[in-house]
Length: 144
Image (cartoon, rainbow, N blue to C red; front, side, top):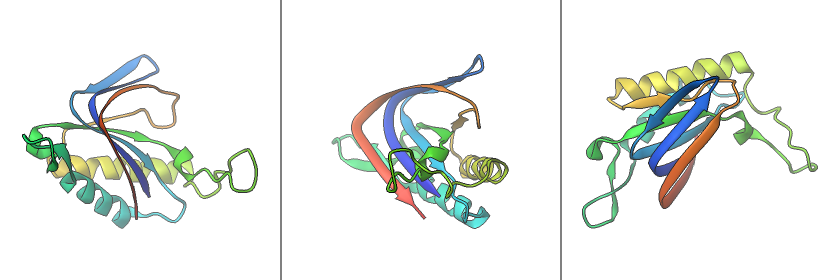
């Protein structure tokens, strides 16, 4: 699994007439690979929940989302597994099939919620309009 994590002041996702939004927190793109499993999804959720990417009173990146009463916006993004090394059109063969990807995406979000996270989710498999106001910017790539 791959995560692209961005600290945001706010984020909004709109798909099929439905909208989800958060205030300050983390906007997270989740890519699921063909070899990923439940253990990896749960481990990544636990790591994300504990990550200290939020600013403290001195402006240092030293607090977790929970520490600042922030939120998570989690969006499935199979294109994180795009490979354009062989040409100009990316191949997505290393991305998990949709049924497996959706199950692991749902498990990832469920575990994040179980830990105490305030989680909003994108619309799996649908075209989405995404607005995010980055804070910092702080962007982290995380892969297990």
